[in-house]
Amino acid sequence: MIGVFDSGFGGLTVLSALLRALPAYDYLYLADSARAPYGARSAEAVNEFTLEAVEWLFEQSCPLVVLACNTASARALRNLQQRHLPARRPDRRILGVVRPSVEALAGIPVGTVAHPDHSAPSDASGLVAVLGTPATIASDSYGIELRKLAPRLRLVQQACPLWVPLVEAGELEGAGAEYFLRKDLEAMRASAGGEWPSRLLLGCTHYPLLLPLLSRLTPPETEILAQGDIVAERLADWLRRHPEEEKRLGRGGLRRFATTDDPGWFAERGSRILDDSLNVERVRLCG
Ligand code: DGL
Image (cartoon, rainbow, N blue to C red; front, side):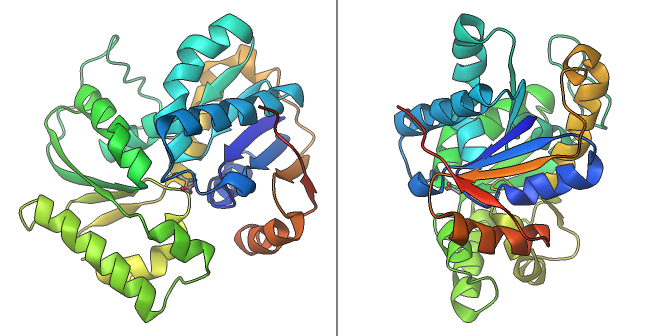
């Protein structure tokens, strides 16, 4: 199975795009809802929790795990790829959402292997923005990747600490949600000297659920990028370029859902995102 991990149910926005683009594969989605949100946690805690989640997915025989969670991708992916996999799991792969999102933000077409060691950086210029949790923004993961791939692009990054709690509470449209969205968008614009970015990346799994309100609060010239489709099309490309990995994946169209908290709560939220009823199991992650 392809393992898909998120701190909570927001990663189903990514899974939903994967199921549309790559429906034949088997998927196992894991949400660490009992310890979510990750966005305000320390780097150490996010590293520890993500390692436990990934190990659980490996134990369930996932050869490939996608970290749909930006906070986990930003805080834990490098450590997992550079230390954990070579030492303990050389036959497994973990992919995150930061790199593919930065490629899209920089306008690098799918299929261009824009590895900094192998090809020239993009010469795209102008202003782009990333919105994310405090942990994602504090890690500067988006800035680090963007400076490598498109050094002439200016980047403004804005932490939006209350957007995940708003989505968790189902506050997607009302006056309360509008107040906090406006506040953070204004802060982002102020950091950019009053300019709106040409592209605005939603660097958090929960934010696509705020899209209707966000589109009303941003000018039409600002293109809002949600990550689901970006991750799906770039994962499809990665599988084409790694046929030996692709061959290891089951193609029975299976879907399995697991959470570390109440399965009923998760199934109720998740079924609205996937537009399907979900059978959810409760699991424990070992420290
Ligand atoms: N899944 C997280 C992310 O994409 C958002 C929720 C959280 O803070 O755990 O950053």
